[in-house]
Length: 265
Length: 265
Image (tube, rainbow over all chains, first blue to last red):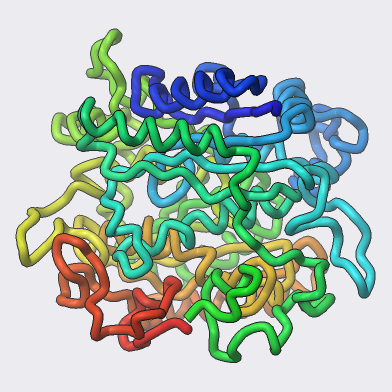
């Protein structure tokens, strides 16, 4: 396989740096090709702004969606963004690795998504009809590829459990797993999460590294999160509401969007 | 009241820019004082990196949590971050305004949170005992103040409904409302969200502006989202799990963390 790992931590001599090296070593030992985008080391620019659209007239109003569409169509995106798109097309599997800061990804990684996931590439793809609402949520440019997160969290695992005060980790990561990765077509694997990392010593590192190695060995075979396909018949078009018969009327929560669960509550 | 509005859109001549002006005008008409941090206009730096901690030795390993703690204690954070902290302490009410990009905030605003919400200020506050697990989730430095989001979304409102394919808007915003705003103590008001904004014309703008004006007029009186208090007795300490009697054993979803709901499903 060809694996692209996006690394978003400012310090190589960190737990994240050590886990990245563990992952790469194991992947290469399995015969996979690995490429890494080290966002901090590369000086990645985080903000979507006018500089992203060199063909936009200086006095024109910047409408990010329209500018993204036009620039992608005209192959006029900036060099750094085009290089990342090329890597995404090259890779069979995408890994996003980051420390959980304020229950989401660091700004630099959000900026990678905001800038690289262009209109016509990661969204705004496919036709709309009464059978389909574009190619998204299981379909799209990146369909057939796999993606997963490697996340470190300072908090306790219990605090991220189903009834934990922070909210369940799978729900906290839903906007990323479903909204950023599944949207353009990836099959999304369950995330790898290491908890209580602020209190970690050498003894604590070994089992985490072992668990990560195992996930890297099973990257091709781990079943993805069973999100429902948008155009698979489960949602009404165009309201994109889950069909009434597929879950209890009072059911709420992201669990609604998993195949075969019926309900979340 | 004193209101701080954090504005995170790259174009002033945008719907977001127009809504910001509507909000400010209405707030001032009500006699409130308003300050604005316009992140793009100010050239806000999005990435947490070594430059944020001027007292960190050049060869020292950067541990963001530790560096943040040390710098906040020593009043050694950078000037831009200190200015934002001062504004947060000044304001009674905080408004974060942004376009929803990939189901979350733009990178530049995440970078404002990552950098300004320092250890000792927004987290790492309070003592731990069997009665309390620090001051967070309803307690903390910013307790007694109000916060709310003003969000624009390209997608349809139906797609963000309870059974909509994107996931429910309140769940998508939970990591921000609960994880970023409630965590350091804010009372969080229900968000203001404008949908289908990519297809908006002048006729469509008027009712959205009217709805926003109404929200600005009721900023001081709108009941906040009834999140449970961490140290209010609803969670076991130190596991921080919701007490068994407070919701059905099989219940899941962020609804668990609302007072008086019992369950989400």
